[in-house]
Image 1 (cartoon, rainbow, N blue to C red):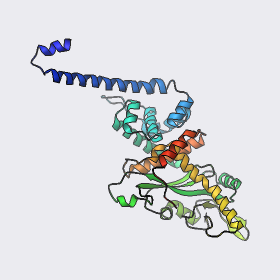
Image 2: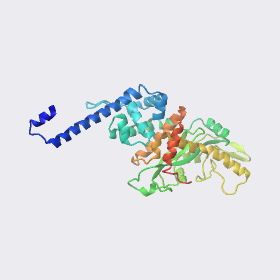
Image 3: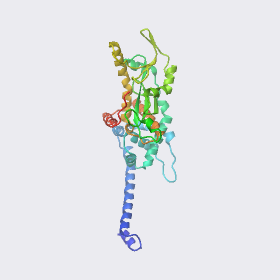
Image 4: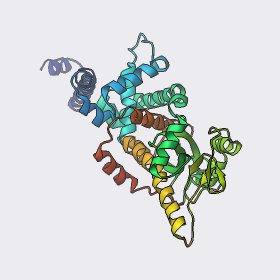
Length: 355
């Protein structure tokens, strides 16, 4: 009533304009309240009330692992407050990034969840991804104890093996330049992630960024990993005698990869009993890399939908997800059954090209 009286006593706007103005005010109030509620949700509910199972379901890691990650990234992520506004805490920025990476949710959905701007979500994802690759990539994605890895593969049936290698395609939107180079054999735009994995499914070496049209062999031959394996500098000098042949530490690949003294691949064509047994053992051990890709995408399901990031930023985010995968695996974080089902549903839209 006071508002109506005030307008009626002046040569102000008409009734329709008044209604519109009132609608804008109420809308602004609702937005403000929604953001305040979302902020309270993070500060008062997630940080203070959630138990470990809630952390695991939503951030795909327990609270302890999350806080350890924040401590590691803090030097690279800490920001100063300004006169205009307080900077987001490291914990909130990491939480926003993990939420976005763990789900195929839109930026708008994440914005509403955390009570921040849409652009803030995008900035947080890239800030955290860059910090992860700068601070943790070389420490976390690395070749571990070689003898432990060799013993692990030997227990699975293949002697003197140091890892399994494969590639997987990450769907992307059509790039602005050279877009045809990114169309893979299944007909969608993608970027290739190639990885060497140990016996426990942890990434020991990754290479990401090649266009989806490029064949796995071409990608592999242009990596530092190939050069080091060819020069004999990646693994220690450790040979065993098989029959009358000295066998170095080898890696295992599918038929797309070249047969090398240090790379074993399956026999093809008509097989005798011994060749069939060889293929069975090689396939059994090589499954660890396919399982690793499955768990990577199951945890960080944003990799299963077309990324709208730039060609420069997509490899950074993929590499960051590989680091997070290793971190979760090394910490023994539970991989929930529902994640695999959801990942399979999303992956059906972007089938992996045949080798």
